[in-house]
Amino acid sequence: MSGSPTLKVAIAGASGRMGRMLIEAVQAADDCVLAGALDVPGSPALGHDATAFLGRASGVAITADLGAGLAGAEVLIDFTRPEGTLAHLAACRDHGVRAVIGTTGFTDEQKAEIAEHARHIPIVLAPNMSVGVNVVLKLLDMAARALSEGYDIEIIEAHHRHKVDAPSGTALKMGEVVANALGRDLKACAVYGREGVTGERDPSTIGFATVRGGDIVGDHTVLFAGTGERIEITHKSASRVTYAQGSLRAARFLADKPHGLFGMDDVLGLA
View 1 (tube, rainbow, N blue to C red):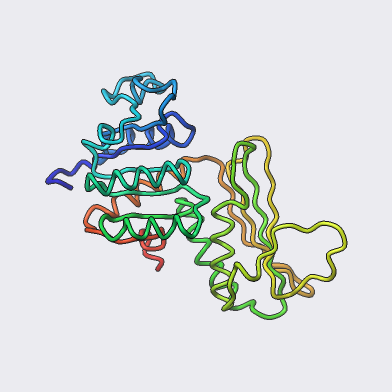
View 2: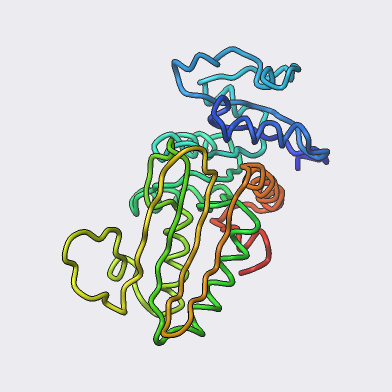
């Protein structure tokens, strides 16, 4: 890490809920220092100290200038929107900055663009940075293989009223893990809504149900419903701090990587 034990971290979306949680986690970590804070042009937070909300100064001003925000950073942590993240990644590539991406809602074309950037810089891309969620993904792979016959699979997720994409990136990742374990293509077998006379359930499908309301941080349940029994694998987030801590683990993981696209299973040794 540039000959220093301190990891220099920039945060995108610095004035948002997740951005502030990440900044607080960086400030609390012994081996990290806040080196940059980015926000969108026109944000009322621009020019303000990035840690003012904590009641102390960091000397890092929130900026919309990508070059300035990344100038002193070794890694960017980004939980924003797909278009913004892609612009940030292009700047990271130009400046040789590593990237941890928790943004969700990418199209296949955008994922291909991320993979292209990863040929030049190391990137961790994960729809959920929670250590617990990524352990659950491993459990789902095991469960799907063992329950491949005679069990209907439904994925139920709930998030706060402000979330803009549905189903959540985590729910889709859970569906992908289950589908892959069963030798299916999620695009071909996913059912995202049911209304009216739908007919009997096709046993080859994977169903999704979405709930949005209040301040729910994130609940996910995968239901394997058989005859005479149900198995439910559930993860509930009570705080975004788990995503922040997982993101810092991902940032540390990238320290010695020259390039490549990684997931949290790589970070946690679950791959």
